[in-house]
Image (tube, rainbow, N blue to C red):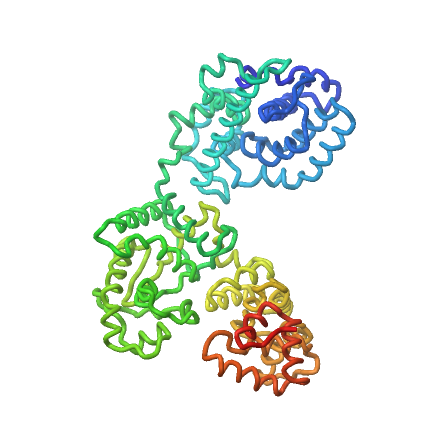
Length: 598
């Protein structure tokens, strides 16, 4: 048992000192005390007085990292752990009591959240919880074994995946082993007066065995041995998840695009879940086969292809357009995210679309049959890669269009999720607060953003309140940053014909969106008072309508001059109003025209 492994933690002395108070009696308090004192000692707390001295840093680590990683706490006993810390701090001077109490109070909500978060569960913590629900005596290894034997399969907690528990368990194993090793080395280099935490005999049996004993003591007696032996299939390790290699590749793709796993990818319009781990393994097998030489030059791009089509909200992409990108052809950025029509049927052999369609897809005028012939080889090579992926049933290619099937979307969403990428489904995204959804949608393709924003409004029956929430978010999210223009630009993807007129009229006074709301009302033939629109909103509407990159500089400057001529006060007043409303966008649009900002 763990109490014979971690020695000299001062547990007996501590329980003796605090045993007079009723709330400090009983096995539950003793169990909490053992875990708290043991973990503080492992992390290097000063034991010079005979018991570990908590510090603010160690207390925070204990509550937010160590307890959620190593210790199962039965319902109703969570408050005992902060209580142990308080009683322990009382063994020292008054300032220690105050400092520890402050940290406990500050971290209390996060501590409770961390202890109940399915993402923090290990196999051992989960099965201890499950066994206790079944009535097991967690201190009796034989009862633990019997209860495990009686389980009908191995259920998962709500909100968790097998890969999540496996990954968290592997991490907890590493952290506990490292803590034990450091504690042994620390005591060997500077032997404490109260004696070492780990005896030479305990270390000689192996740090892994010591970690197992602690894990059992902090979850359920004998559980680790059972999960490593006859019931190993209840707690699979990394070998059971080969598809995590593909999950890592998709994470790399996401980081290349966004630099942060918390930046959400858009939800698919339709999603189905088969046996997602099996589907993910199937995708991995295809990806590994495509890495062979016969699928050069695009076989190694399979993870990228899976990611980019998911990143498009699972709208179909064009083989020809993607091949043109790989071949460094010029593709109009305004067309990159447009969905591609999926034909009802198409010949199995791939053919590049006719020249007019190719011009439409790429936005490149002047293409001819020679260009089409030049793209034929690369596009056929890419189509061969996609056809191998399509053989899984999780990807499709029909003519020039390719994408994920609904079940493929479920598999890729699973792979993104197990590596911590924010990948909501449609219902989750629609339930987000308006500010959160708008912040995410600004980085999504316009058709996808339009769909998801519309879903949010429809989920709230297109009420005036729902529209006002959304419009307020469009005007405030990313305000004052370089992303403000893209955010307010989301107004243009909304179907304002469904907006209650009172919501649009209320937005007339908005300093960002007022002119957008005025235009929407005018297009609907609704009554609107243009005098209510602030100057800043009118300036932003003009700024956003100017061509920022397309067309020769002369024509872009002419567009500005024509607009400025009708602005009260002329070009100087217009530039000043634009700069005050959105300096980042004003510099981006006006700078190339040779117009300096005030």
